[in-house]
Image (cartoon, rainbow, N blue to C red; front, side):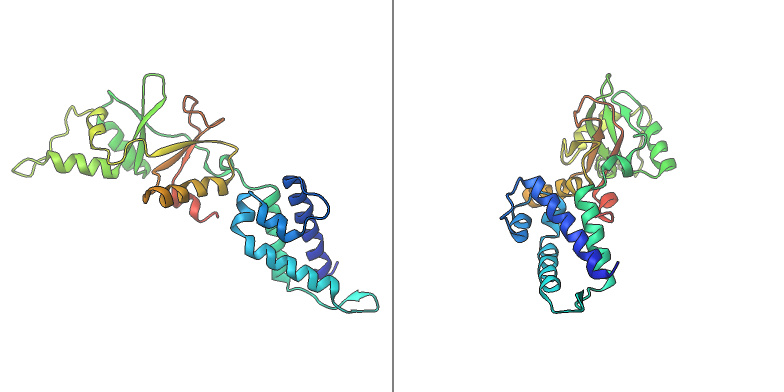
Amino acid sequence: MKDSEKFLDYYNKIDDYLKKEGNFDSFATFSHKVNSSKNKLVVRFKQQLISFGELRNAITHSPKIGGKIIAEPHESTVIDIENLYKGISNPKKVYTEFTFEVKGAKRQDFINDILIEMRNNSFSQFPVFDSENRVIELINNNTISRWISSKVEANGEIIIDDVKVEDFLGDIEFTKNYKFISKNTSIYEAYDLFIDQINKHNRNLDVLFITNTGKENEELSGLITIEDIANLV
């Protein structure tokens, strides 16, 4: 199969997918489907898709020799449209990339224990659970630094013996600065939640917590930071 034939095949697959997803009639143009789509990946790559539509027109309306297409797209273009089709029709879900045991602590736990966990496992933040293991807050390195700076004695000493996790809750700069998402959320939808937070509130979410259906009272199955997901999208 020639590259032009592969390109047209994936173009038609994208066109059919957008038609079904948006419930368009047969008269809707490809560009109209793209511009009307709410699909996160379509929105993100809208201009590229429209360019693919123009390329498709150039291929199908170009002169032919012996019934064969003479306008052949670059191999890299075929790879791009193939990857885009796969991403649009079956985007990666967060559970495939970010499922792991989430370390956390209860309000009455001593901070020494969780600090050791943070050091040994190289994580910079942890959720605080209530007695039923529901998340009530998130403590990160910034919170710990703010608490330490307020406890430095005149002689430079810092005493953390018998200090509990709940003692840090008052030093959280932005409370409840996290969201819950379903394990079936796409990585593109998850990423856009970070971007929306930045655009609306001029600050980033600390994390997205993953649960089975996105409800707060469900067991955590993972978490995501913007640094974790940026390279994937």
